[in-house]
Image (cartoon, rainbow over all chains, first blue to last red; front, side):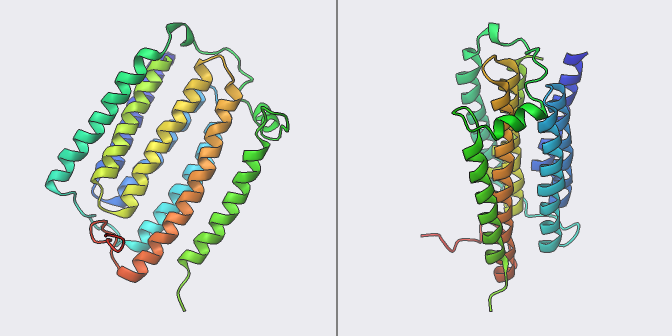
Amino acid sequence: MHDFLFYGLAGLLVLSSLLVVILPNLLHGAISLIGSFFVTAALYILLQMEFVALAQIMVYIGGIVVFILIIILLTTRLGEESLAPGPGQKVWGLAISGALGGLIFYLVIDSIQPENVAMQADEEAGGLEQIGLRLLDTTSDGFIVPFEIVSVLLFISLVGAVVIARKDK
Amino acid sequence: MTLQNCLILTLFLFAIGVYGVLTRRHLIGILLSIEIILNAANINFIAFARFTTADPTAGAIFPVFVMAVSACEMAVALAIIISMYRHRKNLDVRELEALHG
């Protein structure tokens, strides 16, 4: 049952991601990206990481993709076909991405030991409480410093985005 | 469902994202493809956290940081896109060659 679900979700994920890349209309591509992120959240739930699935739905779908959709609607006409790739561009893109994928496949797949691949039974590990405690932990394996740095980074990028996007006087 | 299955899935997603970055000519299209690549990296983090014994909680925390940084990246990138559209009315990457030597 788990295997069947996983293969179904994986197929849907690859299909919707392919649609994001191939569809000529960018608006359709962004909507397909929403589908791809939903399937990813389902995959996280299948892997028992509920908090990351919720964060995926709220941050990516609720924030980033909606933001992208607004920008697409601001800068292109609705239903406008975007620029098609040039004739050589598709061939080169296919060749380079295939070569990179094949290289990583060759380098990575053999190095996974078979005894490591059983799923962990520890249900608590990815839970909300564990993640929250770990994020604010001040000992050496806690994540308090990156947590604070990310908050500063968010603030700086917000101010920077406003400065870049405002109208010149 | 094993670790190898997850790795092969993310490998496909990464290749799709690279193909998109190389073939899209619209700036926003390139951003969408980068999102696919980041998504593949997140799935990898979660898969390794779940299937290896080391430290699952740390593996679940990393995607949260990736999400925050990619939100920052999107905000700045879309601000740049808006200001570029205001100046040039055109987002074809072949015509944006102000930095071309």
